[in-house]
Image (cartoon, rainbow, N blue to C red; front, top):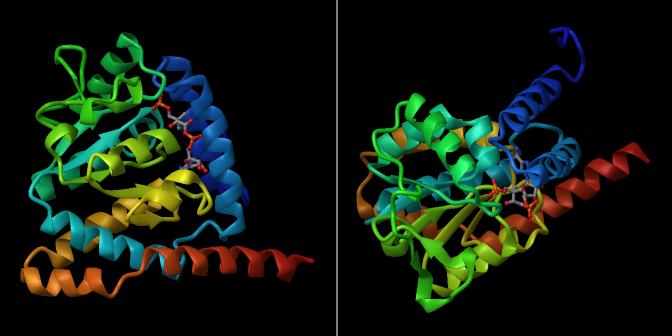
Length: 249
Ligand code: PTJ
């Protein structure tokens, strides 16, 4: 039991959630390691949404609102940390939710589907009931996609994704948005919009921006996107991490 007054209260609560999901079989073994890596980066950015991340989130909201077929991809860590928020975001955007696992087993797919349904999702794609297609004919398990979801999507939100998958999605011509605390990861480097923030802060803020920009005209949304430069934004994030470290030396 973590005490509310503990200086690392929020971080330790997230650990509890992650471990609980692990023991239920929702999380892959590697999901715990991925979370630990995320914690380290979160510490370096001060465990709050920094300005470059907020800019990326605003651009992501604009891109998702402009999309014809937006899809939110969900893995074990995402399902463990922000299931309700993913469902709310999908509802606001009229987007599909698709389970996409690196360490895929029928049991994990079922458990994650249950979590999403309990969080209010009406439909969940990428389950075992569907015959998945291969993107661009690449016969890798990393290239599977639901024919009604990622396969036909123009914009895909892929939080905490591995580099191979991000590459396959890019090659298939999708615009991709990621949430990844490591600005140097292959996914962050490959994505069109990289949100360097903890998913537990990023998705609620993305919801706020989607609500705020919902009635903007297409031209106005396009202007937001034109004013956003992902490469530069990642550079700012890296500089910020350096500065934080220097202050402590
Ligand atoms: O559920 P599965 O089978 O699809 O597996 C999911 C994992 C996360 C295990 C898989 O996709 C994987 O191995 O990912 P990586 O390559 O470890 O990348 C995960 C990235 O997410 C790392 O760069 C972490 O720093 C980052 N990360 C971890 N926790 C968070 C995070 N980013 C944002 N918010 C977090 N809470």
